[in-house]
Image 1 (tube, rainbow, N blue to C red):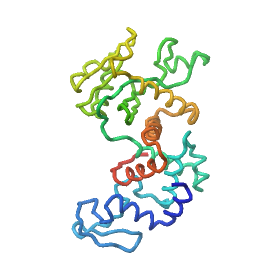
Image 2 (image 1 turned 135 degrees about the horizontal axis):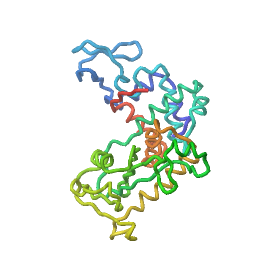
Image 3 (image 1 turned 90 degrees about the vertical axis):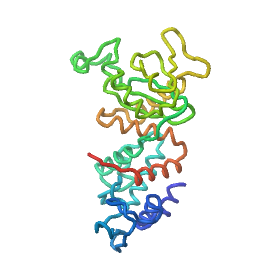
Image 4 (image 1 turned 180 degrees about the vertical axis):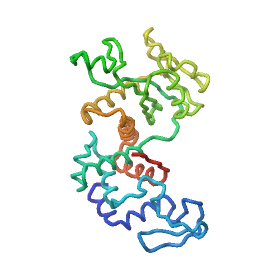
Length: 295
């Protein structure tokens, strides 16, 4: 699907609402407040009224689109442009495409990236590794190095990122405050099915996870052990190059406050290869998930 086709298929608010109702309810409205199927339609703005709790609602309630004043066709256009931008797109450029102000474009990007987060558990053989993201500080002033806790032989001034990749499958990325077991282990439990085999290097932060999973294969890189039969961490280690090129080549500088949202976008584009697949998956996520969102 190209942009022209998208604009033809979703050129009115009604067509967009019809599409979202088909995805969320299979075109049979369900009250989001009490889950009652006995509803009556209200002509104004495609709203419905529940005959059980007597509340009115639309298909947008409880979704990323809730309370939006922007036409849905602009939302759909923004989604299509973002998922199709291989190197990412700035909020300023997106604002020009949509004919909205920069703040509105930034708001759209944040909500869309939130829906890009992978929620399904990884299974089978799962490679786990961590990396550090941040620029070089060797030529910066001593006062700035001290402020950022810079050490020539350390990574304290950089941001740690945990990567989990299912063999021949999806990847999940998480920002870490500190690369240690106390923070890493809960993330692994939330992201990887217990019947999986996890493969890591000899980093101490992974100690003990063999008690949680089917098997824990440890590759001690310090002793030059990089593979054990079919077990290795080459896949996730190769992905770090993609991540860092995306940050350097597309975003240049990212605030730590929003870093996880950018990681969601990078991982989503990697997990879903085709633009049409990305668009359909993302719209489905945005309308079918519950999204309490704080700016």
